[in-house]
Image 1 (cartoon, one colour):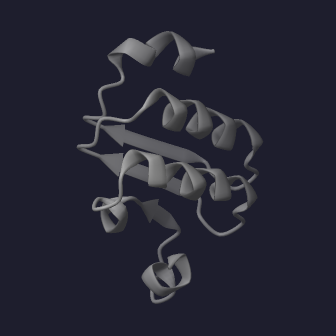
Image 2: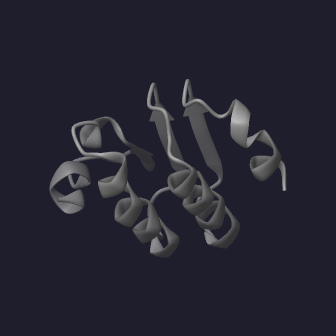
Length: 87
């Protein structure tokens, strides 16, 4: 699926717009797979309230990834996770 959705792009930005129809539970393996990414340099998620599991995994991805340099989370209901994101 990821190859099909992103194969035609020159951009190194991974956006979740294409996966909005999936449940948050289904997002977790996609986020986990980004740990092993060597193409994308930016992750963007907009207008989706993220689960604590997805936020924890995003933090792990950012910590472990050698290529992700930019994480953009817009209107994702993060106020309650501010402490986790700052550590």
